[in-house]
Image (cartoon, rainbow, N blue to C red; front, side, top):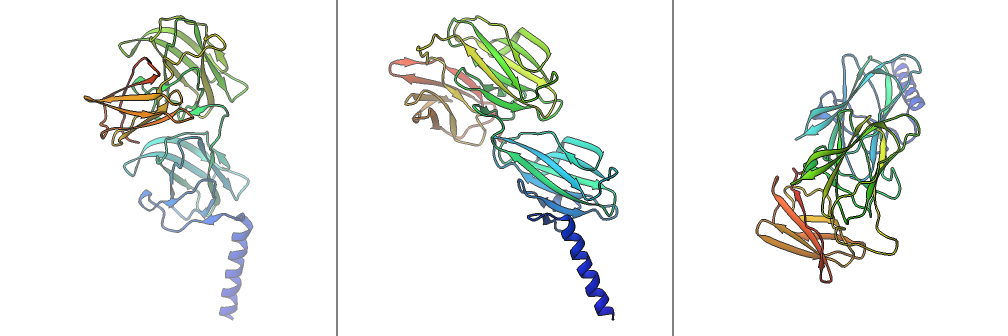
Length: 352
């Protein structure tokens, strides 16, 4: 008789579990009540669990691609009430050190979007009422906006600004309410230029843009300050060729935007003097990657030595160098025929 009852209870437990768990949902392993034992989250794959008494569930997620965004989605098995409390941390050396989301009490919950460089580690902590079941998914969108390049973090200081040119549009979003994004534009010629910001949100004013003219690579003179805006096109600016302009974007977290620059080259003419650009240069690596004119010779000066490579048919270059150290200066320029571009100087940033 006891054997029959035990089998019946087991069947009931299995039935209840199948009622909640969708096809493809994995039931998380027990023992993930500390970040040291965090269960692994995979992109777009749900994990199902039930909170036990005085328990918190920890999950770990590693960003798979620098291009795109992630957001967290939690679905509760109970339609009413707020039974869960979710906290998301950015990791530093395997420790959840920087809190980027703290929900308070929620039930069904979808976070704002966030974007970090490849291999960044995030921790998710789920606490709440005992006995309630949830399904947790780290969702991703690897092509969030069309016709643009995804900006790389960490660009929250002008030293690490992403390069923007008339040939590229930059897609980005603000990860937290305190996040800011910096961009650097080298004036290509003596003709006017302007900046344009496009928001993915149709309503409301979510962004604040500040434009600076630089002196010796430092943004010193404020030339535009928008206040709160959404879709925005600046007035035209006119500065001499080679002047460095910085754009600082701040505002509401979790809303995507596209930033572009329009300089007034005449149709049909091609000014290649400042087309060379670079992605963030990371300490601990020995390669500098970026975009230039297709077939151009790209020169990278690091220390006392200059390294060279040829940009491919898409304009992508990869110049091998000595091992790069944080804070050191790298100078880059391209040569097309007998014409050399303006030189740009970039600091090596800490490895992500």
